[in-house]
Amino acid sequence: IAGCLNPVVLDSYGSESSVLKDNIITRGYATGIAKAVVMNGRFDLVGNQVCGFDEPGSVAFALQPDRISRSLRNVYRDNVFQRCAFVMDEGSKILWESATKDGNQFINCGSELKTALPLPQIAPGKLAATGKPVFHAPRLTKPVTVDGDLKEWPRNDRKRVVVLETGPMGEAVASPKAWACAGWMENHLYLALRVAIPRDAKIVPGLNWQGDGVEVSFRGGDPKNRTPIYMLWGTTDGTFNSTTQGGASAEQVGLLEKATGYAARVEKDTWTCEWRIPMTDLGLKPATTKVLLFNLGVRSTAEGNWIAWVPTGSAIYMVDSAGALRIDR
Image 1 (cartoon, rainbow, N blue to C red):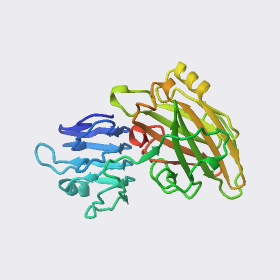
Image 2: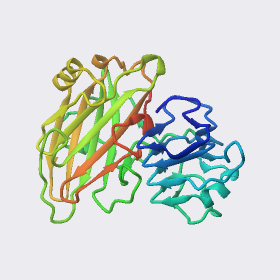
Image 3: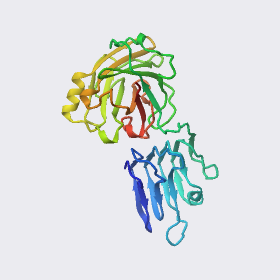
Image 4: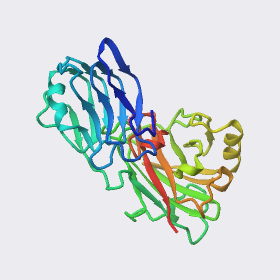
């Protein structure tokens, strides 16, 4: 459920068998959303992911008594609320306290509901005023040689480098840790990544999101030029491929695989990779495109985990809930 002004409104009496289960609810392109999930009756909320309702004053979860003002003992179990300005409003606290709760997680949200018991797992919010983290891609002044050697990239420029250090759900991840840098020239987007290798770990290459590798996912950020989510996977032996998982056609995937440049190198403690991605061929001209909805992910087989640039509360390629890559001129 994405891009709606009133994403979920459950406004009836409900019953013990009324359940909202296993949904992904995100803000998408919509703005001015006051409340993401409104519950006015006997409804259970189980296994849902509510992400990205990060505008000032926006509330992820609003609880209200039913039509005859009963405080019902609803069940709220195994839900994830992530990157929301406020988890719930002041009037919801009493109903939250009287409900049956277990396994809910509140990640990178701006309000901690300190009076709500038991306390949920809540990480302090770190949202910028715009809501989305920004990855800057300036115009390059000279061509980049796509060979996996990152000597051309400004590793210590804090304005350009982004760090990958959390899991897709916002969970803390001990290792690996990676950094990335971007730029553009003519009709291509260039990316560079350096990934730390855990101590004594064996690197395992593999295509199709198997083995150790990097995922690059993006779509156009202009609602008037809606594109599918393009997905690329590059592994440690210098091979890569794409997929239709994000909505790209087989023809678009074939074009992307044919026109993309990729190289990787494995060193003692790190492995590196570089990308040259054909933007114009995908209907995204760098000269006119301002923003891409964008995310990066790294998989480590040794650690059995993923890290993401921006946690989405779901798959890394769900870029509507991730960050923004800004094409700087």
